[in-house]
Amino acid sequence: MAKITFITTDKEAITLEASSGSVMQLAVDNDVPGIDGDCGGVCSCATCHVHVKPEHMEKTGEASEIENDMLELDDNVNEYSRLCCQLEVSDALDGLELQVAERD
Amino acid sequence: MKKSKLSDPFKKARLEKGFGEMNDQNDPVTMLLRLKDVRKGAHNWKTFQSGATPGRIVVPSEVAIRSIRQIPFEVDPPEHKSYRDLVEPWFKRPLEEAYMQQLNKQISAIVDEVLAMDSVEVVSDFSLRLQSRALTLLLNTPYEEAETWISWGTHVFRSEGEALDGDKANILYDYIDTQIEKAIKAPGDDLYSMLLASEVNGKKLTKEEIKGVMILTFAGGRDTVINAVTNSIAYFAEHPESLQRIKNEPEITSKAVEELIRYFAPLTHMGRVATKDTQVCEHAIKADSRISLCWASANRDASVFENPNDIVLDRKLNPHVSFGFGTHNCLGATHARQLMRILVETLANKVKSIDIIDFKENIENLDQFERKVGYDAINVTFNGY
Image (cartoon, rainbow over the protein chains, first blue to last red):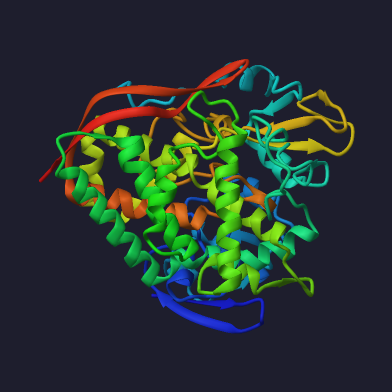
């Protein structure tokens, strides 16, 4: 079981728990504002953009090249950006804090 | 296994040069063929604008048959954002439970209908009807309106000969005018009424602006949805094991739909007009000339997609651009995705196999390339359990 906290663009903290599935799906299933996951999690729509809390970067690991290619054209990208459809829920993510990115 | 195949006519040009060239009514188009270039071009709206003369970013150009600007499609930032923000929540309604249930009911009904028939011509008697009925949900208009739209045939802008047809377009424009007037007299819960009641930047939308949104809604989701649905039927006809797999593993449905949409790329490309002298792939692009973002080619880019010419139903990383990319990404994508997800699941549950009887392919002529986009007609038999 992993506890994951989303900070919305309105600065609301939403903490959710899961043991499997993608972080995007967890957010969508619980109506976290700003996470749409339109494409269902195949890295095609970039509507699940989050900024990982800097000190939590080692929990999530690095984005793949395909994911980075998507992110690099997002106006709100920074070095902590991830598409959370590419984050699989596991115990390793317990305590993770994610800031929902602003939309272009 | 060849009948449902859509080949990749762009491969050689994509690898060797990265672009193709097409003449279109003496307004040539440089087609960007690589995924990264297509994405960058779509992202860079300052250099590659959509807000050109109405109809010019469409290939083939509609400048000769249309003067009304489609909104938000042919408007660039910053104005684009106000329009998009206005219509976006409406076009996200397909995510609502009640919408999905109604769509499910419609799709179940039409699949049951064709299962009871000896044979069916998919384009006219399945895809067009399904698309038109589903559009009543998107517009929130009475179900019976679909009969009018079905009677227009498969192309709103194109006549049987595929050429641009101003008369056909007028049927749609006159219809929309009438509907706007009706909604002014008796406002309801439909898209026309929502737009009539809306303001952008403190000003009511003009009739012309409302018409611009409505034309986009009708035209953008017609051929594209029809192609996606028809091609899917042809694919499942040749791949009954895929229907079986989705029946057994419904959790892959979303991935399967994204993959079908990647492979079919129902819209081959979309144009932009350069606002200054620039270049793509070391090829000069002059100010006020056209480029196109070739979604169909980008989706087969082997530098990004493994086995790009295979349909891999559970493809996990699938950064396709069938719904475009960036600012102007497809407004109707939510509706289209729900329609396709429900269709694929319904087919998997109700249909055991599909037999193709005969077919005529719809081949698009892009000068340097010829691309199959779907079918003019395809007769099949649906077999149930």
